[in-house]
Amino acid sequence: MTEEIVVVGGGTGGTVLANRLAERLGSAIDAGDARVTVINDGEYQYYKPAYLYVPFGKKTVEAARRPLSDLLDRRVDLRVDRATGIDTDGKSVALEGGDSLAYDHLVMATGANLDPEELPGLAEGGHHFYGPEGADSLRDELADFEEGHLVLSVIGVPHMCPAAPLEFVFMADDWLRKRGLREDVEITYTYPIQRAHGLESVANWATPKLEERDINVETFFNAETVDPDAQVLETMEGNELDYDLLVAIPPHTASDLISEAGLGDTWIDVDRATLEAEHAEDVYAIGDVADVPTSKAGSVAHYEAGVVADRIASRVRGQTPTSVYDGKTVCFIETGMDEATFVEFGYGDEPTMREPSKPVHWAKLGYNESYWLTARGLL
Image 1 (cartoon, rainbow, N blue to C red):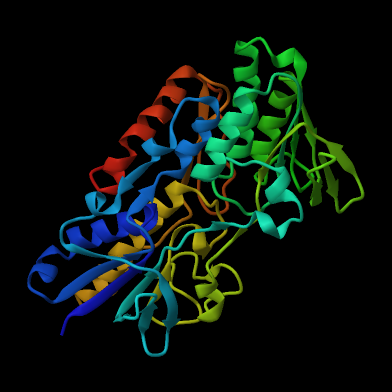
Image 2: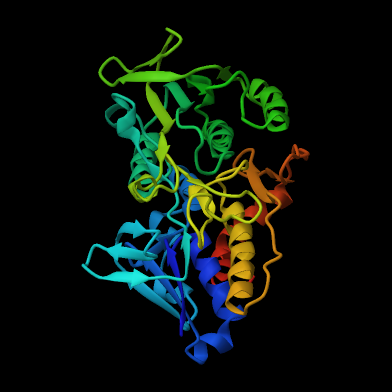
């Protein structure tokens, strides 16, 4: 009997996982004893960290996508279709096209979705760089923005790429200075808790740097509505903030598949070490959709994918899985247009901040270019 391994989602986590499984179970797949199938609702994979550079004219959205079929091992089956339901008792995934796939092992890698409509007025009054259309639109706005108040407001928490809001204001400050426009632009950064970032060590490092750059910081700032006509952000705390250009980190949500299948209220409840779903057997979650106490970062999905691939391969071979995820996260942080730093930490750790440098900036750009090799499992 063939062991059916189904992966829902062809982003970083799903692709790395499928390729790792193809490597670990190659002989079983070739013999027909195992099959790995990836279900994705489109033909392409998108490298979202590249969108940070689009507003500044350093990347194009076209450079941030590749055909998923080019990234997956030849031994992996790709189904371009939308999963519409999960029966964890009957162990099957329903597809929009009318078919269903039975599974012995299911991995949910469906990521996080942007939901700007959750905040009244945000879709009409704000911009973002978390998707291709948003990044392109923001590039056009920034190109013509020469004076006024630029506000970066972190509204959605948790959100993808936790350092990206800080990166954006640091880059915007440097970009405007290089163009001789910084004196005519006020920049304000807002965050919903009483410090500038969720991780205390990052907040302690970032706050004096924001002050040095003359970037205003508003903490405990929880946006409630956006008035796109008056160009005003109104908060739950009763405050108002005027803007000329609003860049917001929108609220994030997960696929409705999660709650409908009883896997969690929004994100999938998992054991943080094994990444096994708490409310269903033989189901795993990796990447942004997994509710683990660390960042929704691409590196997390990558490391989690390796752990789950090891665990599923062990089960297919009839062995006891031993691989566990320790919360490892690695994140580059741009501090301008040509300098960056990076952090590395695990569960229960606070990252140690390093001084920014040009070599780290170039290392980040180098990784962005080589990411597609990572997705293929070559790095």
